[in-house]
Amino acid sequence: MARAEADMRHRCLLLGLVLGLGLALLAAGQTPAPAPDAAAGPWSGEFNLSYVQTTGNTENQTLGAGLKAAWQSAPWKVSLAAAFLRAESEHVETARKSTAALRGEYDFTPRFGVYAQESYLRDLFAGISQQWITGAGAVYKVVLGPPHAVAFSAGVAYTVENREPPDADRDFWGGTVGLSYKWKISASTEFTEDAIYLANFKDSKDWRFNNAAALSVSMTKVLAVKLSHLLQYMHLPGTGKKATDTTFLASIVAKI
Image (cartoon, rainbow, N blue to C red; front, top):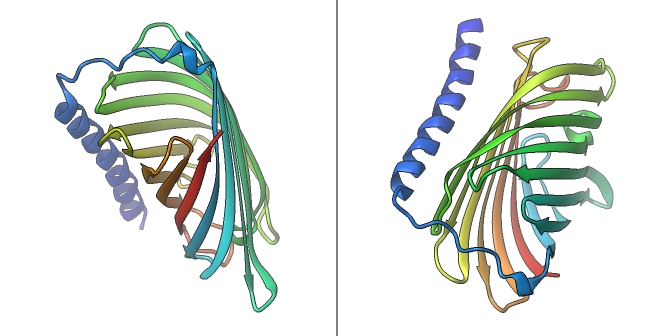
């Protein structure tokens, strides 16, 4: 059993490395991204409403909402993201999930920078009443693009997690490894994927992996349609819970 768990963990890491290296090779030789349009201002953001189909610990249909905002003035960038999901079945609430993240970045060069981040999760149908993760690390942009952009990140994080009974609460130091990919398919279409692996230094079996992939198509300068697939994996899930949750979202996005 221990060997099978180790093999699965190594496969996830290997898959991420292979994907990142493959994308880097594919995008090698691309010209650097043009500088941001100063006339656009330092602020950007978007609001989305989604239809959600979930599988895993719950199987239902629901509505979701999300908000993203960012302020960028080189070499600084500060971003905020929040999302909420709620589901009902026969007028009974069956799912409720809230997430939020505040992140600050500083670029020393066009390719290398550092970050600090605070994130929050409340996921009752996964057995987590609340989770706080404070992290910091470095980012290296392998390919600047367009059309392809690839970045790797690595850092340390401290997690405080309150579990639903009968599970005990957890707190631990850990390490993170991340991969971000963006493909600007055309002026109106782009694909993004973000993967993050969190290792628990206190208990090596308690590792987690999250992946978010999205395809966005702009209809106007303000409105876009986005299809997203989210995967959340916990190697040691709560009592009676499944290790993997997946969420599919079809969203209308308004840029603000």
